[in-house]
Length: 386
Ligand SMILES: [Zn+2]
Image 1 (tube, protein in one colour):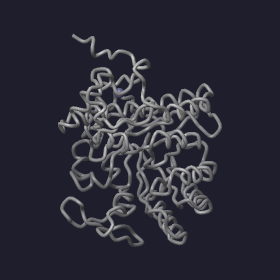
Image 2: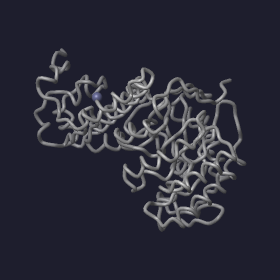
Image 3: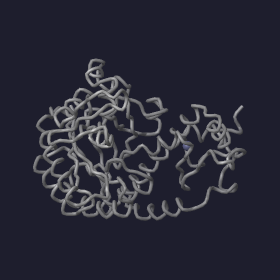
Image 4: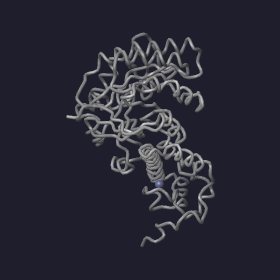
């Protein structure tokens, strides 16, 4: 059986290229994890998720505990079998989502009591129950149960919240049942305060986890402050353990965070954007609802090998979104996830060949540049189809 560990292959500055070894297969890092909230990466079959190159996906404890229930999923062979994803799965702890429920939740020293957004029924999550639920789901990587305050907030609030999360991290660790090839990650909190981040890292490394996540960012502080916080956080994190920045982000966020020493990411952006006609490309984003795409026979991107770009025109995608056809969301989600995976492979390969800084400059220039011109865009290959 595989021992869970992260092996560093190459570094360039603070950026790291490595491989994560787990009971459910290996993951090349830096990596992007598509979000499979309710046991599905929305609008995607598992084969299409695999086809984009994704090696690990994320599941949500909060959603799965409410429907269909973790014990139910366990009885059906665990989340991998239930959703037919044989690769590694990371589950969040439910903490972030129950905190987002606002008036529907009440926090105390031992956990959170909340009402279901589905039927209003009363539930409770504690470090112990969250860890047990993730065990029942058979998560490859279990996350600690933590509190995440919205930013900006007074420093006293951030400090008290971080210390509560550290007490909960110790309880999450006690409740965790170790298994070969599986892991539990601690979550660093502390807002944008360097001293609180440092205190949080000390508390978590004293407990000892197989990996460490950076939580509490991308919650309204802006990219500049997020990068500044990473710069005072990642240098204090163990160099031999994977580093996961939770809930981030745009292509620019991913690149900037890899440059600051992060290995793993998850975000709903590419999948959510895929359902709202927004395409991520090498030349920035496109809104396919825009009238200018109505007669455009070219693919979304000439550099993409996804199903949407190799078989369909912008005009067809435009039509599907205008007509509210499900296929539009399916094709564009595929395209966006393919773009994110391609970007991460590019970044990883550049670290391996020590060319990340030049790639970073090139990517920034491309993201700012205008859409492809007619000359730059090759004749769409689908026009030659029978
Ligand atoms: Zn594409």
